[in-house]
Amino acid sequence: MSSDLSVTVGDGIALLEMRRPPANHFDEALIGRIVDAARDLDGDKQCRVIVLASQGKHFCGGADFGSGEFAADHVTAARRLYEKAAQLFEIRTPLIAAVQGTAVGGGLGLACAADFRVAEPSSRFVANFARLGFHQGFGISVTLPEIVGRQAAADMLLTGRRVGGEEALRLGLADRLAEPGRVRAAAMELAAQIAEAAPLAVRSIRATLRGDLAARVRDALAHELSEQKVLWATADSSEGIRASLERRPPVFRGE
Image 1 (cartoon, rainbow, N blue to C red):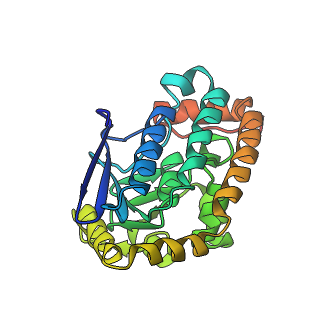
Image 2 (tube, helix red, strand yellow):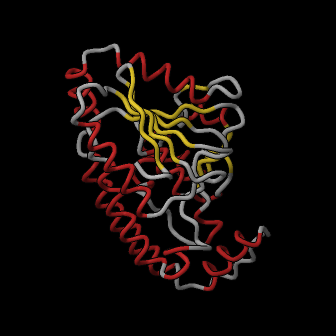
């Protein structure tokens, strides 16, 4: 694979590691590489479970609005990114996210694309879109309420507050809470438990449980982008993104 994504397979488990530390910001290219790798693993009988992890301090800081395609054209970059993101929900192999540090914005969306999330007490899950002045994306409109319930999702989305590892476990946002420094090891342990089960049965059960999730996420992505397109043109969104890049509190005026 490329220098920003490594893939290793052993004992029925594939480890996909994002290598863009410290924040592991993604773009269309990185999400596309994750999708391509996962598709290849779908057809590999030596792989029964995928663990998605990352190098450095944080799991994923979402898209970087201060550089690259997003800095030049938010809408076009998001449209291309979401087309790749939609394909991630069509993967047939169980996926576990090992979340150290923060999963923020689109990084939260990436974590919610997984079947399970493993965290530690210091992990932080953040749906910070309202604090940036625009609508949530990456299918979070579907995945977050499905994982934590409508009210908890509304709390996270409308306040943009940080949810720590212990609260995430209570909400069901984290499925396992590891000891500090053992997030990846705990994710691999969960993966090993799944890998020991009958692989055809695991995929069949998972497909039934997920139902039409991929289709619902694809529809949600289209709606999310339409809302983002409108809000990205507002003064509040410009202020929110600028304040985030400048590491200061935003001043919103409803404009």
